[in-house]
Length: 157
Image (cartoon, rainbow, N blue to C red; front, side, top):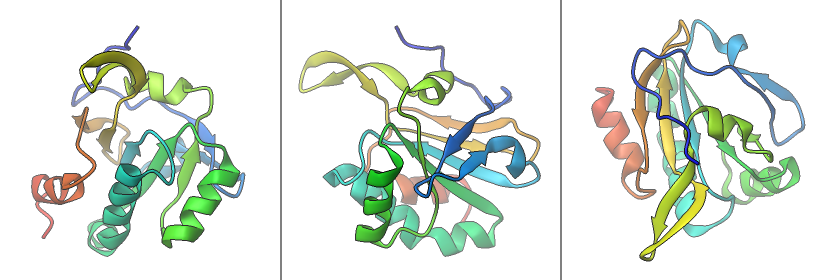
């Protein structure tokens, strides 16, 4: 069962999730900032590593434009900490082991994998406005080239 997809103008579902250090991060505490929230299947896998490193390498441009980047996966905080240390990631990764936040954003459901229909994490990215509304909802994005496309869509060079 897939959740309905979020659309621009929808309120961003609120959440409180632990980061790699076990500290809670609440979306409502980021009101007033633009947030890029991205969901990825698993820490330290090739595609997720490529995507995380692309966000890391472009973080300066994003923060200069007022964006806060948050990555979310079902991995436990200890694995997220390993991922951060291994790849020198410079933004928070959040743990959603019960997939409740994934489901609230429609980032978990049926997808095609090598011609088979499976249920899993849908690699998705959301841009959330300072007042907590969805500005962009990008579903089933590719790990490679996604950050470059996002920067282009946001008008950041």
